[in-house]
Each structure stands twice: as structure tokens, then as C-alpha cells.
Amino acid sequence: MKHEQHRNMNRFYILLNVLTFAAAAVNTGSHSLCFLSTFIIGETPFPEFTVLTMLDDILMTYYDSVEEKAVMKVGQQLNEEKQTFADMIFGALHEGMRDQANFLKRHFNYTNGVHAEQRLDCCELLSHNKPGGMKMFDAFNGLNGMELDYDVHHHALHTETKWPIVFDTVKLEYNKKLYAYFLHPVCIEALETALKELKNHVFRKVKPRVRLMMKPHADSGGARVSCLATGFYPRHVNLTLLRNGQPVSEHLVSGGELLPNGDGTYQMRKSLEISAEELQQKNNYTCTATHLSLDNKLDIHWDYDPGPPTAVIASTVLLVILVCLVAPIAVFIMWKKRHVVSRTSSQSDYSAASTTEEKELEELKN
Ligand SMILES: *[C@@H]1O[C@H](CO)[C@@H](O)[C@H](O)[C@H]1NC(C)=O
Ligand SMILES: *[C@@H]1O[C@H](CO)[C@@H](O)[C@H](O)[C@H]1NC(C)=O
Image (cartoon, rainbow, N blue to C red):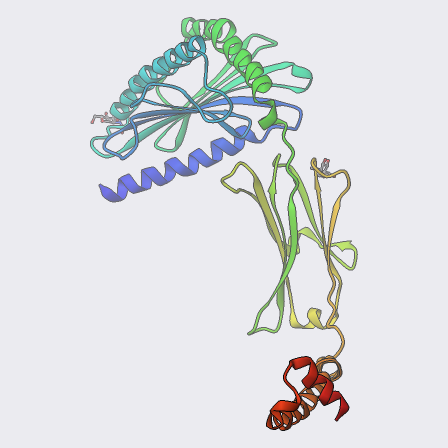
């Protein structure tokens, strides 16, 4: 049972990632608002029901069945009217998902253990603020079972179900009206409002920090050249590794996955393995990044430059140390020795010199 639970939870997180990325993979210029809801049957450390609201890839609100209150994660908290409305919608979603999850658990003859239903509801605004359609994906224990696609321009609802949920004419008409008069306008209005209120987050531009690194492989004599761009927003970036000014063929380059940094920014790394022979060729590797935050492309150079031979540097440095440091010290010490000797001799003749000035004068005379 433990194993089964574990597997289900794993599937659940994999799906979560896939859905989040699918939803956020929107073109620049368009924006989406998505509700990612999870209902869990069985004992887990998590609340039975949670909803995350994502504005593009920004976590906007969090709601769970323990607090029953939508909490803004960015910007200002909701006003009283919006708060009541959001809590009511999420409460209704909770009820709906409880019924569906229990129905599916009975249908699949599942007994004990942990079972999770996940739903993703998204609406989008296309470029020039043109409202797009609305999509819903529903999955149980990590397996997609139902998809709804509402086309606002043709007022059409496309449904696809693997579960025994029949969309007969009556149910289809009811759902079309539900989308047309409630779900779609509410979602679009929430999206428009959120874009206005959170414009400092949505439209922020954060420059990537780009580094080109080389890690030698002690065993093979080869090396790995990596270009890392990190800390940028939005997520769209083009990172290119070049060898002697020419882009390295993509199939030789590994990495390139976009990874979240956890602070709302992203990172991407691209690497190239170079053999010991190639390393001998002393190629010039560079890295280029293009990003919305950069007016021009950012070129990062790292020339393969072995520098002047070490022996020459060492002897030069030694000479400099000798001339600048050792010689004056030697002179000083020699002078100091004489100084001490003469001082001792003058001290024996105490009466002749009572003050320092007089002593020094005396030394100078000597
Ligand atoms: C669940 O059990 C019933 C009765 O044993 C059976 O008829 C049905 O096919 C099972 N359902 C699934 C999805 O395995
Ligand atoms: C990346 O390259 C593609 C193709 O050249 C281009 O259309 C896109 O605008 C570039 N993206 C960025 C962020 O520079």
C-alpha cells in the first residue's frame, strides 16, 4: 500500500509539472489565468483540497480546505467583495471535485490508499487583449480522463472523456451556457483585473547573468564548456554556444531545459563536451544570450588563452620583488645596524647628547 501511495503521489507531481508547463507555454503577448485544483482522498500531510491560481507563471492566490480563504501571494490582498466571491467559487469547486473523485474511486474499484484528482481550468487573453477560449483538463491518479475546450467565438464546447461521464445534449447545452454566461466572463474579467493590478510582476524584465565555464575532465583529458544564464524573467531566452564564432550544432549541445529558480526567475544551461584533441586546437568558445531585457544580444567571451609561460612570469615577479622590496629592506637594515651601533656609542657619552635631536645631529656628524 505504501508503495502504491508513493507511486500515486509521484505521478501526481509529474502531472502537476506537465500541466503547469503546458499552461504557461503561452506566446509572448498573450496571457493566461489558470486554476490548478487538487482533491485528495486518503491520509496525507496535505489539505484535502487546494487551489493555486496562476497568472501566467506567477503564483497569484492559494486556497485550501483548512483555511477556506483565498490568500494573495503577490500584490495586495483581495478586497472584501472579491474575497467573498473567490472563497465562494473555490468552495463550490471543492464540493464538485469531492463528488467527482469519489465517483471515480468507486468506478475504478479503488479501496484504501491515496487517490488524487487534479483539475486545470485556464482562460487566456490573446494579443491585443482579445479574449481567447477556455480549457479544462481533469486527471485522476495522474491519468488524464477528461478535457473540455470552450471556443468563445463559435460558442462551441468540445469534450473528450475516457471516464464514464456522458455529455448528452442536455448536459452539453447546460455546460455551454455555464461557460458562456459564467465561467468564461468571470475568468476573463479576473485575468484583466489581475494583469492591471499585477503589471509590475507580469511585465517585469530581469536581465540574465551569463557565465561561460570550463570544467576539465581529469581522466579523459577533455573538458566540458558550459554556458549558464540565470536570474532572468520572463522565461523566454535564446542561449547559443559558439565555437570560433559559429553556433555549435544543437545535437552536440546538452541541457537547454528551462528551470525555475524558486524566486520567480529562471535559469538555463547549455553544455558542450570537448575531447582532449579538440582542446589542443585552442578553439575560441563564446556564448550568446538574447532576452527581452537586453537591447542587444549579450556576448560572453572566454578565450582559450594559456597565457605567457609560467617560468617567465615567475622570474619576472621574482625580479620585481627583489628590486622593489628586498633591496630597500636590505639597505634599511644595513643603515639601521649602523644607527644602533652609533647610538650605543653615543649613549656611553651620555653628557654629550641629552635630547634625541642632539643625538641625531651627532650621528649625522659621525
Ligand atoms: C469494478 O468491479 C466491478 C464488480 O466486480 C466490475 O464489474 C467492474 O468492471 C470493475 N471496474 C473496473 C474499472 O475495473
Ligand atoms: C529567440 O529566437 C527566435 C528565432 O530566431 C526569435 O523568434 C525569438 O524572438 C528569440 N527570443 C528571444 C527572447 O530573443
